[in-house]
Image 1 (tube, rainbow, N blue to C red):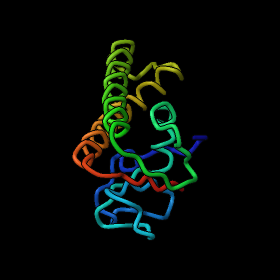
Image 2: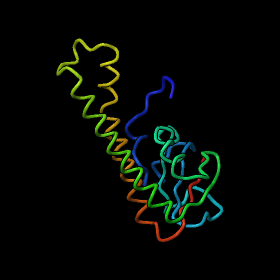
Image 3: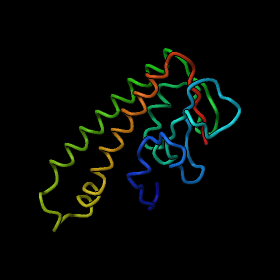
Length: 150
C-alpha cells in the first residue's frame, strides 16, 4: 500500500454508487454480468481494501483474478462467505491483542506502537467490511454473482 493513508471511508463496503470516487473499485453484481459496470444493484470495494483481503479470494475462488470479470455460484459463494467471516474474526482478535499490547497513553509510543495504534480502528472497520460482504454474498447466493475486477 505504500505511504498512502487509507481512510476509513475507503475500507467500508460501498452500497451506493454515488459514493464512488474514481474507478479503482471491485464491483460485486448479483447475477450474470450485464455487459456494463457501475450497476445500481452492485456493491463495491476499493482496490486497496480488496488487496488487504485478497488472500481469502485467492484461496476460495479458483478462477479469481483481480483484472478479470468472473462469476461465482454455490457452493463457492457460501465457502467464500464463511472464509470472510472467519477472516473478520481474526482481524478482531488481532485488534484486541494489539490494543492490549499498547500502553494507555500514546505520549511515549515507539514507532511500532504508533503504527499499531493508528491501524487499530482500521482493523475493526475491515473486519466489519468482511462481514458485510459475506452477508451480502449470502443474501444473493440463489443465483450467480459476478465479480468485476479492475
